[in-house]
Picture 1: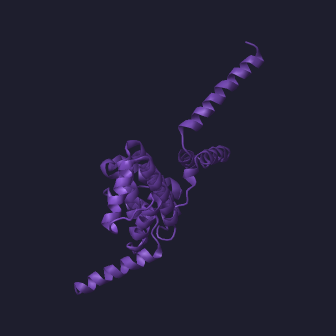
Picture 2: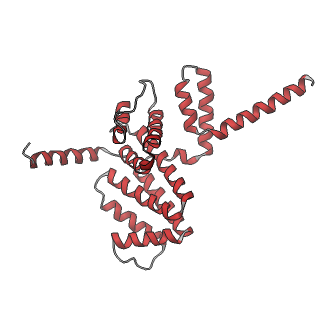
Picture 3: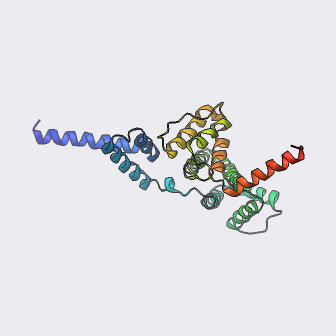
Length: 250
């Protein structure tokens, strides 16, 4: 084999290996690798490029972690699921009747909007709003079938990771994120001081998938609720704790 032929063959193998690497790993995987190998500057830069490329290929990874964003996701998903599946439409009509009353003759868009408005009005805290929105979305995905259920649950997990990483107000330290593991485990999740918030949140979710597989859907909603809590939630919780102590004469 001549030198140009050998070079071309090597190039093909390298290209195939790179394509396989990009296809088999997510943006979060590359970010986790960057956190581990951050001391090697040149390699970290390559990993950053791969991470950014994957996020351009997967717009959902860039969804803003906010209650408004979650509400819009729920609205679009519920409408699309109901249009494609009669079981989802029936579930939403039953939810409307239980929450509000006999639904008027209207479009599925109006039905979904009325349900979301009702949930918003009846939920005094950010955490409750998030839980109710996510629960409604998950129940709709269950009615739509396994493929939709897995897709929706995966999306909620990604949103939870982003929310935990971004909420530096109520989760200001790595320890405050790691401490959330005590909801399903005996102790906080171990972490390194130089670990990124994003990577720690990802490991927290993977730990739940490993150690609480039967409850991982509920855990994801819990973590999403924690990540999207605001200062008002903390103030309400403190007021309630104070009222309980007064009631017990403490």
